[in-house]
Length: 395
Image (cartoon, rainbow, N blue to C red; front, side):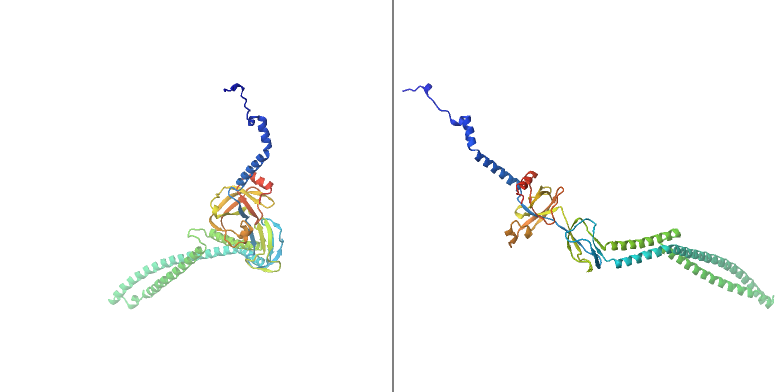
């Protein structure tokens, strides 16, 4: 029997009805909400553990203040826990000895400055004496040489005349008295010639001595032969004055070192020697701890090389807002992790060696960690860092 298709009835699918779809979604919304929360949690976890969690520790800058010379501690101006500033005097050493040395050096300088005028006059007088002696010796030499030449010429003339007289006396043309008339004068001239020669040698010796002494004076003043002696003396006295002034300044600097000053802002962590006791060089009188913007993180060796300089993240702290940090250095070697920075208490108490790569971070902005503070480092964004902190997941 053939059926008439025009009379067949087919019910439409209920899922095609808008009201039914909405009712079904409304009945199942708790499941969808939980799925959404799970997805958000998963993204949050992935974002906040991009490279895992690293243990880190804020660097501590410890300043040990000690004297350069053995001295008695005169006063301590701070106590443990005090905040100090850069350059603040924290302790004073006894300066009795250095004060006496400084006074002696200043007295030497004052005496030297008072004697420079006398010294300059003495040097100029000595130079004038040398110049006068040199000029006198040169004049005497010239005079004696002139006398020697004159006497020598006259002597040679008389000797020639005497030779003729001797010839005439031999021919009995003149008497013996006439023959000997020139001999006394010849003998005197011969003696004069010898004396002139000796005087010339004496004057030459004196001249050489005075020139050598003048040259030695110029050499001691570091003066060239053509230099001005007055300028040289003035320069030498100025140099000697500067040397003594430098000695005074050095003593003043040494005296300043008897005041132990803080090399930076920080907190007094310990006082090693109290007033009345003697401190030797190297003895810690006062210890100051300063904050540092550097944090050392330890990346497990299985993740070695996963950081690079310039990466940014956050250092999470107990009960304090996280600090923004930036990678400034990565150590090339892998070392043992310090026990206190191992990831768990069991790991800290374990005898097993845990190794990691050291990564140096620097805090960005105004905040800085406390000296030695332990932190957990995550490379994450500011949004996720703030969200973790608000929900108490920063540690």
